[in-house]
Image (cartoon, rainbow, N blue to C red):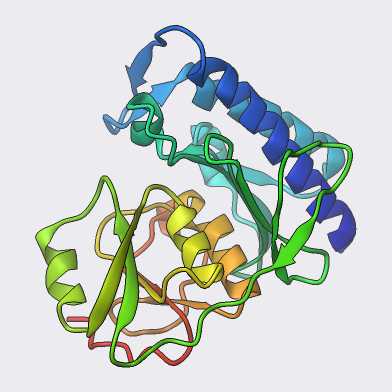
Length: 266
């Protein structure tokens, strides 16, 4: 596997897709449509999806891609494939809150081994390098040239006061009840896959998700977190969260740094 080429391609496609998204975001009012599951979709989602899908197919014709916006791709069954969410956090995008991301991941035998998470409105770019280590690149971003890189490493948690990151749009009582089992010193609030990246960057220790997600929502963020030394486990049995599941649907999960004593998932 040519991981250097994969890293360069995922990075450049994420930046190009982010530029397409920001063209819509910074423009006049845009149309919001509903998909079959009643989730929203915009022109930005569709434009970014077309760009990424075409770019992956050109660069890696031998590797199939599963992307949120193309239902026919959801029939793919392969040991190695790309997972794409061209615009994670569409609700944040619609409300112009900025916490939306471009997500592209490589899955190998159920594990997200490489990934990129780009938040164009926030100016933050996270990805795994050719060796699988996670970095954050400083802007301004240029597709043809890599900027200054800072290695990502998860925090060493304070057992008496954890920093917890939770969703802006999906916080519920079940999540609050679970968080209440831990000694918490501070909260961070973020949308989309940025929550994984905050943990990867040492800005939080714990991110529990007790709600429905799909694999394309989490794969790139999980790759970045794992490349920084973090872990993502199922809520029910604390086993690693894996990919290529039926219908690409995730169970509840917990993203965390080593050293956090996880509460029972029930």
